Image (cartoon, rainbow, N blue to C red):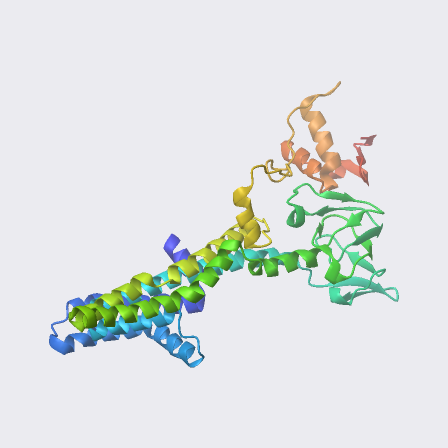
Length: 402
């Protein structure tokens, strides 16, 4: 079942690569059972090789035409074609097959990390509702100017930073801060873009351009996270630039010099040079380091943690003290009724009355009271409900003020 889910999550390109690898592997296994002998034995192995490695050969050819000769595609092509040339057909196909399996795993890991990082982009607002000539108009957040009044209804994202001028509400800021407890908003409260308005309608005076607002800054960090490379990544990039041509030159020397100096057969030393090429291929080294950092940033994003670049991820390795905002990180940030202290009334009756009064509120404390009350609330008993921002609620239950 897990394997099926993995395949479903693959892109179309990855599914095609998996199908190609599977078909190539079947041909490869079947090649060993082929009754063909001599040079005809080459045919089934060559078919398997072309199914699995044709794209590597094409990439190598294109890169050579563009002047980019020394890369992993060139090394894999020359090593495997050389293996065919010396008659090691199974080795040629096996090397290309394992390489392509590794590439598929890498592609899948990168795609998952990209999706995790992209999930943070959901905080971006699609529109802003602005007051123009007494009417409400939906506009692109980029069109809103400082001083404009925007209206945000319950359930909508706050598109731009500003100050509440009309209305009271609570806002979910967990996407920005990790804080699960909603923020209470009243007239004069500062609000940040990316938060979700939960309860009341708000009129907000814009204090920043969209490009300077909180949500834009966060999105900019997400988009540029991959560009801020760690010291290790920069070193590996420079290392590969010199290492790859050195390996190719060393392989050429290995195939020519010993036969000329020692008088040994060229065939044997060409074979050893090809083995040296495959073993020395830097793709594992060059790919694994950036992929490790990118995967780390993606995994953190999946947990709602934004790492601004792999250089910061590397810096965490030297951290000795970590300071957390407790709520939502070390604690759940959800309320629960733990004790009831009634006076001249039973515990169940007190809880029922409290839950009745809180029945119209979406506040987290209200939710905990309603959850603790096992009896069904009769809303006809509740009248003149009023929510007093920052203090609580007031209503009449069975004609009595609570």
